[in-house]
Length: 196
Ligand code: NI
Image 1 (tube, rainbow, N blue to C red):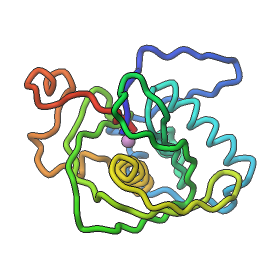
Image 2 (tube, protein in one colour):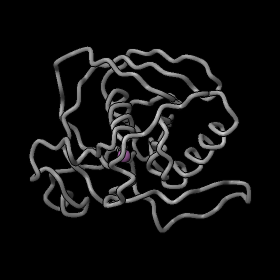
Image 3 (cartoon, protein in one colour):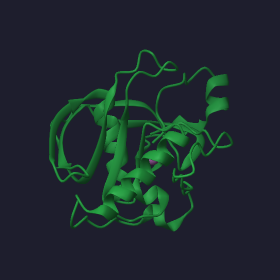
């Protein structure tokens, strides 16, 4: 999930590495990414920096490595205070490598999602309300969390990218998908912090 900020990109520092986010139609977005052998390696740190720089530049709340064309099982997500979405539940900034997800409930809830790879659009996607996820960060430390709600939704959306799945493949009804402007005009959608 995430917001589309294309057109506003500015390189803030010479050493920042903002990559192009691949868009729907690029075959790399449909591929299955491979596991990372050494999560603490230097090459993964560079990849994580690239993902972070790109995610912030595009004003996303998450980004997966395949979205910048790297087919490795690495995702980054999270945001703290966001003045545009003051009611959004914060999600800690997290690097998650080789994620494993357990769905802890059969309960699902529908909410609007967006994706930096599908700019300007939103869709209503059902997701499990409670999950446990584990993996490693880029310092090689293990991560193990049980989360609910928006946090769970962001993780599920990002990790889907590692299996070549985009949120549009999870829509229950194509009528619940469209351009943000049109959805807002029909009063069916109000902005949410959801581009990843
Ligand atoms: Ni996405």
